[in-house]
Length: 568
Ligand SMILES: Cc1cc2nc3c(=O)[nH]c(=O)nc-3n(C[C@H](O)[C@H](O)[C@H](O)COP(=O)(O)OP(=O)(O)OC[C@H]3O[C@@H](n4cnc5c(N)ncnc54)[C@H](O)[C@@H]3O)c2cc1C
Picture 1 (cartoon, protein in one colour):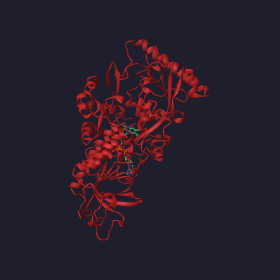
Picture 2: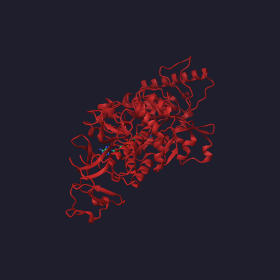
Picture 3: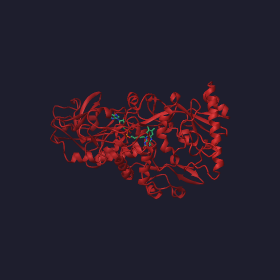
Picture 4: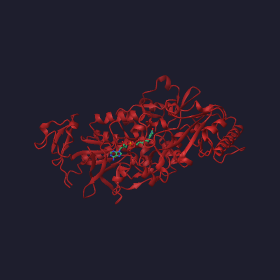
């Protein structure tokens, strides 16, 4: 196939020149504001032939990773970057549904203060925040993935995490300190915990808006409602374009490089059942309905798949949430991650996880799977008067909690939760009784320990007087003070862990045939495999998306500059 560049210049509304080939036609005129004097005589504004166009770089998927790639490519001098998105304008993939929490290394409060817009000097004086070092981040990745995270991928993510945040800030992403998510007020001071301190102002919605503005300012064209259908390759196996569905018609778009940023397969029930296992088709989808594994289907014959294909990120999720996609207004509010402050029981009245084994942001991503395994795929989160006030309003406040069960005795709570199921009611009351005895025994043995949700406080169910076969390792208080609160949760799937193998330094996709980079193909975001296994340190997904999005953007831009595909 022969592609000839630089034949005819048309001008888009933003004034950025775009280049098309002799054989190609421009996009619909209303979209690029074509001046008719530039049109060949055969074409008229109303009578354009079926479009077939050439771009420098095409990025597939307008989430955090895709935006990071597209904006970076434009910043590296590629003038005709096209970002195509399956969803309609206003969507932004899973990124839109996030809390906008980013995990990065930092040297302490003074390192992050210049990045954030929500801290006054008076507030700063009352903050306690430990630095989060490269070694801390690497250790967290290794610990939660049981040592399976690819070491080069992990090292690359960690080493570039702080630069990624600085770059996002430079392009206009507004960060805040996550007081609500990641700090507790203890003795009048805000104590940050869990190694993650930054969120974007207005969460995922704010992040998508900031990204979109930056991409447009950089000259990136964004086409919504344009799903990629297939990659176009040449005889030597290089990727030279994408077939998309445009105005209902399959349309070939050509480019020097393509960046895949179109998410995992979390919203595809068939693929979930096939790869994650039986029952996963029943999980609730926390985010976008558009991440259906299209990128994997398109690269099935080309790219090497690696990583944890039976694994995913899944959380405790409000059982009243919509099933097949997140709610665009409430987004992340359906997450129910207050279990470290209480306990979780299944529909048989039994506990099934150590709710206090680690800080929430190191356990929440694996507990969805545990809930799905329970009878009916549901569980109840339980608190008493001591801890109800510590629950986050964003997840449990009146504005977001659709259903809750309140009771003034444990017996009443048992009746309300298990209705006519006397066996489960009895089992539940036994569970609470044993748990309370074990907590009190720990207190007796370690009277000096103080309850503190901002550190692993060692208040547990284990002591030399009594041990539970399933411990609660931290933050264990008796559940015996009315009123009692219960919230029903199910499993919400966030994103899938299996993905494509990339070259960590360039984000080039590795061929399944020869283990070499596939010319013209890059990948970033959820589609990348090898990093997360079984579990995940909260806030790493967005950071990983920007780290490899920037690499994909910069290295695809290099291939444009090198003019690799001018004559093939
Ligand atoms: C409720 C929720 C809360 C979360 N909170 C956080 C958080 O606070 N911090 C964090 O780090 N992570 C969080 N995550 C995970 C985070 O969303 C992902 O790690 C990250 O957003 C993935 O970015 P991405 O760009 O790879 O994918 P996405 O943002 O999902 O973007 C992929 C895009 O590709 C598009 N697409 C799919 N197929 C095609 C196709 N064929 N053609 C064209 N476009 C296509 C999709 O429509 C989508 O817009 C959360 C996820 C959810 C659901």
